[in-house]
Amino acid sequence: MFRIFEKSRCGVLLMGVALLLPLAAKAQWRLGVTGGADYNVFKMDKQYMTDFQINGRWGATAGISGQYEINDWLALRADLNWTQKNYRKNRVILSQIDYRYQNNYLQLPIMASFSTGGERLRGFCNLGIYAGYWLTSWREGSDNNIFSGFNMPFSEKLVFNAESDQRFDFGLAGGIGLEYRIASHWAAQAEIRCYYSTVSTVRQYMRVKDYRYNTTISAQLGIYYIF
Image (cartoon, rainbow, N blue to C red):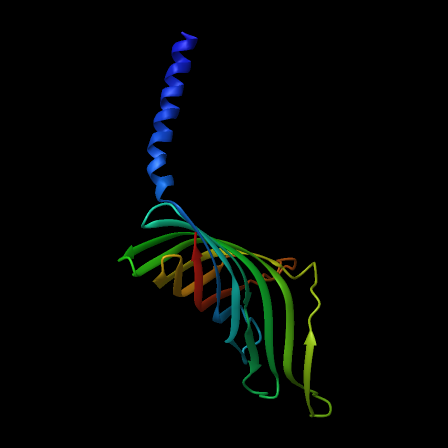
């Protein structure tokens, strides 16, 4: 009975290998670099600061990308990129108060890539998740001295507070784009991508909750070598 079970198990394993062989035969690896611009939207509850405005700001993004093509329409893709998530906070009544924030993140999006089209030109859609880490934060702008009335410009690197700042980031990632096959081993891509954060940049350590989130849209170009 044990030998019969062993033979049946081996038969199932061989059948599984046989089914996967056509996929492995078509599978291809590719490696590339990406870069472009991004626009970040920062959302927070202003609470009592009714005359404050929170506006998005432009930034930059760049990274490396790897992709494993399972067949001609499905692939698994992972990127490692540096992405800026900038924003601006200013007051309506006191225009002298203007804070511009520059935030640098390291991100790892992992996505399924679906594609369709011809041999040269193809459209694709990337869907997945990402994890990130808040590397640095910089602030510049101007403030107002209420006693003297003078405008005070400033530019400073911000120091993270372990109690209040949440440096880990996680969320959803997705994008659409076009790919053009330049040669047998080279391809170029243009993509619009969105990173939707589900983790607040502020830890909830006080009684009054203070949730703040980033949503970042990037327009990027990429060049790939296909092995």
